[in-house]
Every structure is written in structure tokens, then in C-alpha cells.
Image (cartoon, rainbow, N blue to C red; front, side, top):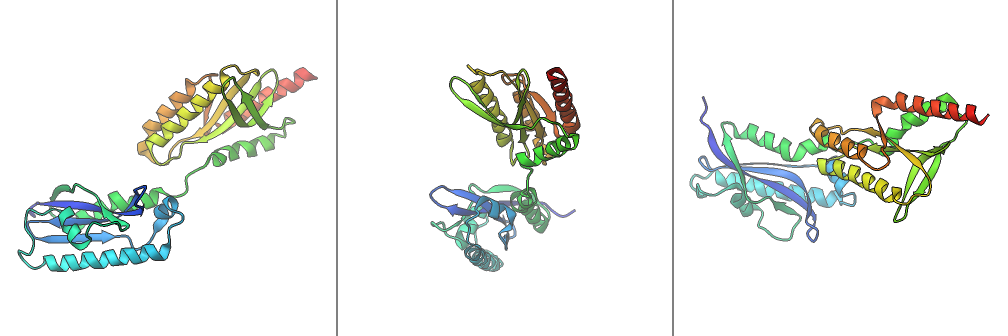
Length: 286
């Protein structure tokens, strides 16, 4: 069995604006002190994550910065092959600082260094690169919007050829008001909103639910018109965010007005309910 060796690593970051310190991970450097080995891997293209986070990023400038970084790290790797050139108690942060001195440039690195044991530094580098850099390219594929969630509802309603036309409705309370994109009225206002929870992280998912619960609370206080809220929702693409999604649904269900929640696989149920209520209203009116 190959002996496991201690290694440390540093994550390279592209800092778009040094004043705001917003960054995206763009590379990983590993240092194995027992062998004096330095391994590195950096981005060679912007990818969807960088384009999404920094839409005004200059592609050419970014590419030049990454090529310069790659050259500096390649020089460091070559130098470490000289036995005893660097102390065995150095870590990845100290090593990368030799190649990329800390300054106000856009390429920075994480600190303190991470660490672990490896019997295959190349595989460990690939795993860390996927963990900190490339995995977010896959997950930054287009997420479903609120409009995407509502679209199948709209199409099915059109198929039913109902006489009622859904309209935008503003519910005004004492301290605030809330605009629903889709609504119709019989004895009360039936208001509908599509909410996509196909978001990037757990905090974003819960925050969106809390915001809507807050909207309902503010608009319900002193509202002069009775309304019944309904939400059609979709969950996150990432399965590890399922718990946050369940929390978001629980938050909405306890919101003022006792909103009805329909998940995206319940579109037929929502449309059938709207159809039944509209038909009943038409029959009563006639």
C-alpha cells in the first residue's frame, strides 16, 4: 500500500473588486512537504459561474491574468524539484505566496491552508479542484425562474377556455401592499404567485420564503379586501438543498392568510381547483 503523506492546500480566488472583496474560486495549489512537491490547477476559461457572478468581467483581461498565474505556478513547481530548496514546515499558503506575492491584484488565495493525507497527490488535486472550482460550473446552469414555474399553469388554463381572465392585483394593507401577478374575484380575491426555490444556497431559499411570509403579514394588516393566497412552487435542483426547501414550505404554510401551496407536480390540481371555482361562480352569477 502506498504511504499516505500529509499535504496542505490553498484555493486561488479571482477578486473582481478589491473594495467589495467579492470573489470566485479559480484554482487550487497543493504542497506535499515530505517530497517538496507543488501541484496546481487553475481555470483556463471564464465558465458560466464567473459570467453569472461578474457579467461585466473583461474576458481578455481575465484570461491574461490566469495565464500569468499558471506561468508563475509552473515556475514554482519546477523550483521545488530541487531537493531541500524549501523548508519542510512550509504550507501551501506560504508556497503560493512565493509565486504570487500578496498585493492588490485580482488573484488572491485562501488562508489559512487546508490540510489532509494523500497517497496520490494528482488525484487529490483533481478532487479539490472539482470541490472548490469546477463543480459550480455544472450547478450554475440556468435555474428555473418564477415565470418558468407559472408557465405550465398558464398553458393549462388556456386549454380550459375559462371566461375569467387572471389579472394583476394589489392588496393594500395599513403599513404595506403586495402585488400578485395573477388574480380573479368572486366573493373574495383569489391571488396566485409562482415561486421558484431553484436557488443557489439554503439561505437564499429560506430568505425568499421569509420575505413572502413578511409580505403577507404586512398586507394582511388592515387590508380592506378579503383575499386568499395560493403559491405554485418548485424546489431546488440540488438535492442537498431539499431540507432548506422543506423549511421554506413550512414557513409559507404558516404565513398569514393560510396560503395554499401547490408543488410543480400538482399543477393539474391547481388548475382543476381554479376551474371548479370559476365554473361555480359563473353558475351562481347566472
